[in-house]
Length: 408
Image (cartoon, rainbow, N blue to C red; front, side, top):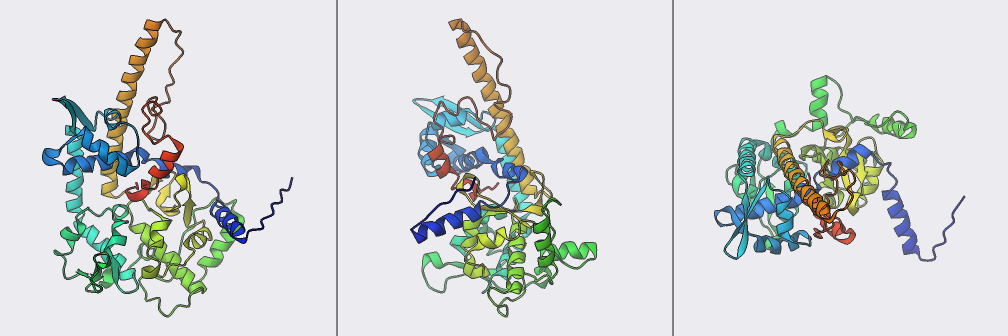
């Protein structure tokens, strides 16, 4: 059956075509799962940071409740905190509830800080590489802050890194406006002007080229990939001023640049909208999503939760990362601790509900053992306390901030 739609409004036609193209990439269940693994982790990581900033690292639940609004969450903060007893210790004192991190949680916080200290020069190299790829060798601080969690940078990276490595970069403000503050490269480091693709090729003793991670049945996509890969690789660290916009050489350089950007992130992924903020600095095309969709063997584009995200295919094996940054390892421990607490909370609630049903003389069925199997699935109490994550409208607003950390 053929469905014919007539649009009289040209803008409506453009809207339809644009959105259809964004949906055109085949879904990869493993990579889609990778995008949803940290759905609860984002909120709890924010709460953790809120508590750590409070005096004596103790926060009133009332204060956390106010902060819930900044996370676009509804419901009671007390109910949310009680779901994760392994992470948050809630207690009543006087006429109010207070919350602090558990000993196990504080242990992970200390481990994370220790890893950040050991990774300091890794952060310096990542920042230097970003500046070296930019057109004028400087980046706006406000824009960079939107990617700092993707890159693993500590919140105080400006204070921690810039003064200490003044021979590598500096803070400048040529316009005088606060929003115009930039980080500028002081000296070029040729040792860092090597992309992940070039480093891999050097290790294997081959010419630098892209790899394709698609099933053999994607015949046409493989043909287009081989045709694209037949031309010489162009390093994102080379000056692009001599390249013509819209040319095949410029496309090759841009694909290499996005590949390198994603390689520098913790989870080998980033929001397309956030990458789009750097169009001028990295000479990215106006329709970045169209370019990414042309190369499905290199990039995977998803619009999960109404957030368009690009993942580096070669960075994943199934739904897991091929190489895990030490910071990712610590953050995964946080997720495991969260899940352990959530399982304990669900078990308690199930026992309480079981007793209530027994008292009422109700006939009991077998419990659903899969409800708390993973952090991607709902808990029996998510609907009851209106936590916000599973209400359709709240979920849309929540996932606007999903990959600030992200993301995972």
